[in-house]
Image (cartoon, each protein chain N blue to C red):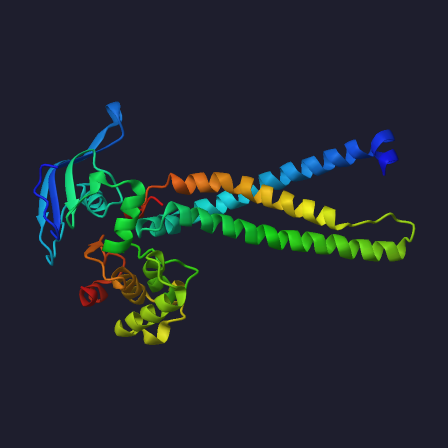
Length: 138
Length: 190
């Protein structure tokens, strides 16, 4: 592995791919969360008007993001594993290796993506005035 | 504040003003409103569209800050409360009936009613049990698991009223509570 890391372009190529995937994941997840939040501003406004604390609203958004991210992580890891198993059967010389460190790193990346993607939504809800539920503006 | 605020008093407003916008685009929605509502009193605000009714009840409910003037609700000077304290005040003391019901679409009727109790710290099981009792008292005992989209306008309104009353608030604020339903159902609800 050291040889590949030091003497080939594989780390740069794979690293670029991973970085792009991370950025695209952040953008898509952030946009999706934000759209969901905007579509449900009326509900968030209602909860805030009824006295729900900002801390609890933020927790709701984060929990939702982590649940969705967790499901996506599970599906992604599962599909990668299934792919590896079947690919190894079809091509015994294929180098497929899925150590637990990769799974842990992916989980950490997923959590970071969820947190980053939730920031816009959290900000939108925190600045939301509960009075909008009376004004029909939410 | 200048107004005499007594413990347990209802609502007192003195010289209340509210401006939206600033500079040339500034609109004055409230201009020097004085209002006294005694505990147990039912007060109806009537006026043409745009005269500031919604702005006034938003301030009384603690969901909007006045530009100037004094407002005391249930003996509490709302201007002295932080954002967090206002939220806690609303959760404990204020019940809301909104013009468009504003029921949470993914929660059942009984779960919607349980929301104020959960916000006030009750466990979900206890809140749902209490909400079920209230829903039965409202004549909707057979619709506990119905989603708002499965209820008629009158039923949704009854759920909204049950949600507003379930935590026994001392101030009930209703914004055109019968405008989204037919006249006959509205008269029945009132």
